Structure formats: C-alpha cells, structure tokens
Amino acid sequence: MNLSALKKIRIVISLSFFAAISLIFLDFRNLIPTKYISSVLFLQFVPSTLKFFVTFSAAALGFVIILFLTVLFGRVYCSAICPLGTLQDFIIFISRKLRIKKFFRFTKELKILRFSILAVAVLFIPLGGMFIVTLLDPYSNFGRILTDLVKPGVVAGNNLLSSAFEHFENYSLYPMEQTGMSVPTLVVPIIVLAVVIGLSIKKGRLYCNSICPVGALLGLVSKYSIFKIVIDDNNCSGCGKCELACKASCINKKTHEVDFSRCVGCMDCLATCPSEGVKYEYAYKKTKKAEKPETDFNKRDFLVSTSVYMLGFAGLLSGRNKALSGNTAQPITGKRTPVSPPGSKSISHFTANCTACHLCVSECPTKVLQPAYLEYGLLGIIQPHMEAKNAFCNYECNICGNVCPSGAILPLTLEEKKKTQIGVAKFNQNTCIVFTESTDCGACSEHCPTKAVNMVPYNGLFAPKVTEELCIGCGACEFACPTDPNKSIIVEGNAIHKTAKKNIQKKSVEAKQQKSSTPQEDFPF
Image 1 (cartoon, helix red, strand yellow):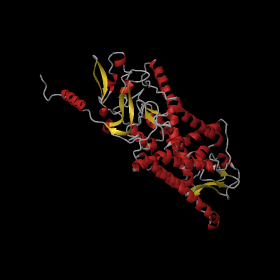
Image 2 (cartoon, one colour):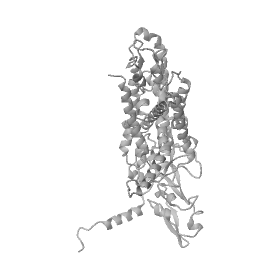
Image 3 (tube, rainbow, N blue to C red):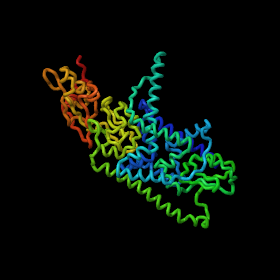
C-alpha cells in the first residue's frame, strides 16, 4: 500500500466527523434526528467515558473503541475523530497558505506541564467536580465555540436572507428568534478559541500535546502502540522534510527518532518524505540486542502510564458515586436555587457529569437552557441551567435527555418528563399586578400546562394560587408573567428531582372533552 495515501484517508475521515458534528451544533431548525446525533458522538472520548460510568451501557463504550484503536495505531482520535483537532488542522493549513507559518521544528516535550494538567484533571473530579475537564475537554470546547460564537452568526445570516427573500415573495426561509447569552459565559469559548488559534499558528498541535488531558492520556497509551511511524535509517536521505511537516513537532531529524506519544497521526510526514525513509509499520521489529537497553525504562514508563490511566478511571468512577450519593449541598447564588434540566436527576448528578458541551443548549427549541454564570457556583460556570425569565421548558419536549452525550441528562419518555418535578413555582403577591394595580391578569395560570397555578377570588378579582405538588417547574408561568424586571412568580429548583402528582381535575376535564368530541356511530339525521 502507498503510505502517502494514509494521509488522504485520514483527511476524509476527519472532515466527515468535523462536518457531521458541526451540523449537529449548528442545526438551528432541529432537523437532525436524535438517533443520528447519538451515533455521531458515540466516539467522543470524555462524554463516552462519563456516560458509561453513569449508565453502564454498551451504548456508551465508544471510549473503549478509542483506546483499542490507540493501542493498535496510535492517536487516531486526535487525528481523525476529535473536531477540535481538525479545527487546528484547518488553522494550520490556512496559516501555511498565508505564509504566516510555513514549517515546524522538533521541540522537547513539555512533560511536566502535560502530565500535571492530566493529574489535576483526573483528581479534580472526585474532589471538586468537572470544572477542569469542562474547561479542557476538546469536544466540549468545540461545542461551545460553535454554539456560543458561530451559531448566532448562522442564525443572523438566515434571518438576513429570509428578509431579502421576502422581497421576492420567496418564503422558503423564515426568521428564527435570536437568544442572547450573558457576556460572562462567552468569555470561556472566546479565550479557548484565541488560545487554539494562537498555538496552532505558532506551535502546531501544541494544545493537543501540552494542554489537552485527553491527548495526554492517549499519548501514554500510544507509546506502546503496535503500529508506529518510524524512520528507516537505510532509506532516509536526511533532508529533514518530515520534521518541517510535523505539526506535533515530535520528529527529530538529527537522531532519526519519533516521539510517538506526541504524534497525532496526521500522516503529513509520510506524504512529505521523498525517499520512503518514513514508514508506518509494526513497531517491534528491533533485535533483542537493540531492545535490551530500553527495557528497564519502558517498564518504568509502562507502570507510570498505567497508574495514571487507572487513576483517571478511578476518579471518574468516584465522581459518579459522589453524584449519585444524594449530596444536595450546592452553592446557590442570586434569588433562587438553580434549575437543572429534566432527566438530570439532581443538581449534584448534573454538575458532576456535565462537560458543558452546550449540545443541549444548541438543541433546546425554546432556548430555556442557557449557560450558567454563578447559578451553580464558581465550579459550575458555563454548565447549562434552566433560565425561565425569557423562555420556558416545552411540555411536549424531551430533546435534551436524548442528545446529552455524557449522561448528565438521562433520556426520559414524554410521560416521564411530564411528571418530573425539576422545581416549584413560588408566587410573590407584593409585585403581582393583581395586588399592586388591582387589575385582572391570569397569564401565569393560562400558560401552566399542569394547572398547578389557578386563579382564585380576591377582592372581586382573581389572584394566582400555586398547588406545589402539581407543579413540574417548567417555567411557563414565570415566562408569561408580565411584571418587570422582577417576576411575580419564579421557579425555585429542586436539588433532587421529584415526581409531581397528577391533576385529577385536569384529567377529568380532558376525558370529558375527548368523550364529547368522539363521533357517534350513527348520524343524528
């Protein structure tokens, strides 16, 4: 096989994953089926690992496949599956075309930085939550960049085109509501994008080899891959083109060595080499004499890498156990307890398993899911929460649980979702216009899907009354409330989700309506 063809194969696979994942996050009309979303995101390493420890399901074994491929071929996840890796390749390609950066040189590994970040990431999970993983996971960072920074521009472009099409009486496009995010929550994706662009132009894939914890972990595994890129001394002409092409800066032309733990498998060296001096082959062809000096060192490295690797999984498992232990101690900011999405079981479960990829934010049709600022506390920044001031959770929607790749939001059937109490509406008569302006309103009651809010007589008018056991915390009442800036009815989140009671009266009314609308067997005339 022509080894240079491996680069073309890698490019096709990486572009396919990049395009598929991008379409998922930029799908502002929610046209993509949730089954397709799950299959595309199956191989994303961190979400798959978390979901496995939450569900213990075979449907969450994508990370095992990634590890298996890494043992065989090296860091194929970094080269072909990770969307942030492909984004870096785009930036490198453009910088070369613009002659900003034409080539790279071999650099020494930043081992201390690389493995310190990995250690902190895996240790932080049982000690403090998902904060470090949230900030550094490549898939989640890519999701936030698209959802928070790119998608608003796509929606704005759609609205501009739909307005232009209307002048020609073409209504194939229609405007979409643009929901703005708070400025503080945009800081993280902006900084990450700036860092990725800067490092990609100047240092190639340095982000993958020195900052990304997934890259560090897979680098440890790839050190012992069965197939590796090696330099054949017999065929190498010493031109150094492979070193200049290496985006990972891991090829040393002087010593003819490849640091395969840092190699991201881009195959650029294979396509660049004019003399077939760079090969991709079975890694253990050396003689016993050549292997002997390295044996002790390799054993020591293997023990260290295995320890770190097991520590990572132990940390993830510990984080899961903590999430499911019923710990309800959560930092609360502002005027109310945060509301986590239906299917998240509890605030502790959600914050312990959410990587803040913002896929649920992107897919939410009403945009009630928004990145948190300090609603979950400092360690929960940018993890999604329910913001009912400007939107509400659709009673007939369960999309967020069906698309969540990490298990932070578990799938619910519509019937289960309609009974899940994520919070309870709290009424404040001091700001309600029925009490302050002596005028009828009833917007909260009209919009309540479970009739947990009813209007009761008050001084010749009707005032809201909340039956808490019927409330599911969807926020429709808060959204509909006309008082501004402070709503007269708000939803306080449940630290642990509960099951709301059925509204017997509502059920009876619906049954009567259904019965009255049922056609008779015989016509009355």
